Image 1 (cartoon, rainbow, N blue to C red):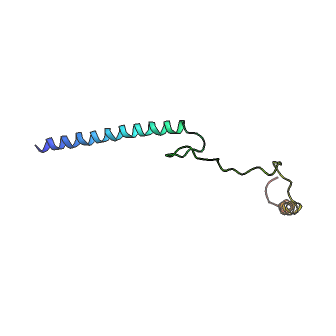
Image 2 (image 1 turned 90 degrees about the vertical axis):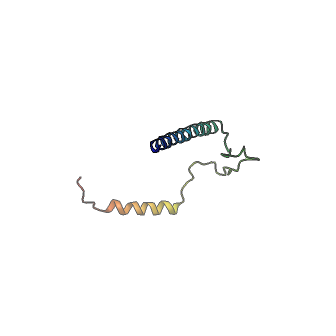
Image 3 (image 1 turned 120 degrees about the horizontal axis):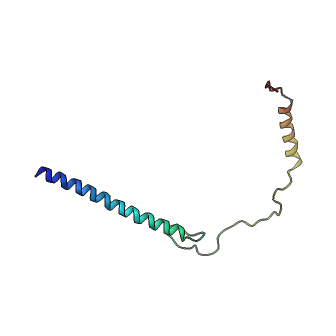
Length: 91
Protein backbone atom coordinates (compact mmCIF):
# COMPACT_ATOMS: atom_id res chain seq x y z
CA UNK A 1 0.00 0.00 0.00
CA UNK A 2 2.78 2.56 0.68
CA UNK A 3 3.94 2.39 -2.96
CA UNK A 4 0.37 3.01 -4.10
CA UNK A 5 0.23 6.22 -2.06
CA UNK A 6 3.51 7.33 -3.62
CA UNK A 7 2.16 6.66 -7.10
CA UNK A 8 -0.99 8.62 -6.26
CA UNK A 9 1.13 11.53 -4.98
CA UNK A 10 3.15 11.56 -8.20
CA UNK A 11 0.01 11.42 -10.37
CA UNK A 12 -1.60 14.14 -8.26
CA UNK A 13 1.47 16.38 -8.55
CA UNK A 14 1.61 15.83 -12.32
CA UNK A 15 -2.12 16.56 -12.60
CA UNK A 16 -1.68 19.76 -10.62
CA UNK A 17 1.21 20.77 -12.90
CA UNK A 18 -0.86 20.10 -16.02
CA UNK A 19 -3.79 22.07 -14.58
CA UNK A 20 -1.46 24.96 -13.74
CA UNK A 21 0.01 24.88 -17.26
CA UNK A 22 -3.47 24.97 -18.83
CA UNK A 23 -4.50 27.90 -16.64
CA UNK A 24 -1.31 29.80 -17.58
CA UNK A 25 -1.89 29.03 -21.26
CA UNK A 26 -5.39 30.48 -21.24
CA UNK A 27 -4.36 33.43 -19.09
CA UNK A 28 -1.55 34.25 -21.54
CA UNK A 29 -3.94 33.96 -24.49
CA UNK A 30 -6.38 36.31 -22.80
CA UNK A 31 -3.57 38.76 -22.07
CA UNK A 32 -2.45 38.75 -25.72
CA UNK A 33 -6.05 39.25 -26.84
CA UNK A 34 -6.48 42.19 -24.44
CA UNK A 35 -3.29 43.91 -25.57
CA UNK A 36 -3.95 43.39 -29.31
CA UNK A 37 -7.46 44.86 -29.09
CA UNK A 38 -6.71 47.73 -26.70
CA UNK A 39 -7.42 51.29 -27.74
CA UNK A 40 -5.10 54.17 -26.78
CA UNK A 41 -5.74 55.34 -23.23
CA UNK A 42 -7.56 52.17 -22.18
CA UNK A 43 -6.93 50.90 -18.67
CA UNK A 44 -5.75 47.32 -18.32
CA UNK A 45 -8.72 45.98 -16.38
CA UNK A 46 -10.99 48.97 -16.93
CA UNK A 47 -12.57 50.38 -20.01
CA UNK A 48 -12.00 53.30 -22.28
CA UNK A 49 -11.40 56.49 -20.28
CA UNK A 50 -14.28 58.94 -20.00
CA UNK A 51 -13.69 62.43 -21.34
CA UNK A 52 -10.70 63.82 -23.15
CA UNK A 53 -7.15 62.67 -22.67
CA UNK A 54 -4.96 65.31 -21.01
CA UNK A 55 -2.26 66.80 -23.19
CA UNK A 56 -0.11 69.91 -23.16
CA UNK A 57 -0.61 72.23 -26.11
CA UNK A 58 2.38 73.29 -28.19
CA UNK A 59 3.04 76.94 -27.45
CA UNK A 60 6.32 77.23 -29.33
CA UNK A 61 6.46 76.73 -33.08
CA UNK A 62 10.25 76.50 -33.15
CA UNK A 63 11.63 73.02 -32.84
CA UNK A 64 14.96 74.26 -31.46
CA UNK A 65 14.74 77.73 -29.96
CA UNK A 66 17.80 79.96 -30.05
CA UNK A 67 20.10 79.64 -27.04
CA UNK A 68 20.63 82.71 -24.86
CA UNK A 69 23.94 84.51 -25.33
CA UNK A 70 25.01 83.79 -21.73
CA UNK A 71 24.75 80.02 -22.29
CA UNK A 72 26.78 80.27 -25.48
CA UNK A 73 29.52 82.27 -23.73
CA UNK A 74 29.75 79.76 -20.88
CA UNK A 75 29.89 76.86 -23.34
CA UNK A 76 32.65 78.50 -25.33
CA UNK A 77 34.72 79.23 -22.21
CA UNK A 78 34.27 75.62 -21.05
CA UNK A 79 35.36 74.21 -24.39
CA UNK A 80 38.27 76.66 -24.56
CA UNK A 81 39.71 75.15 -21.36
CA UNK A 82 39.95 71.75 -23.04
CA UNK A 83 41.38 73.05 -26.28
CA UNK A 84 44.28 74.84 -24.47
CA UNK A 85 45.40 71.76 -22.55
CA UNK A 86 48.18 69.49 -23.66
CA UNK A 87 46.65 66.04 -23.38
CA UNK A 88 49.97 64.24 -23.66
CA UNK A 89 48.55 61.86 -26.21
CA UNK A 90 50.15 60.74 -29.41
CA UNK A 91 49.50 62.92 -32.41
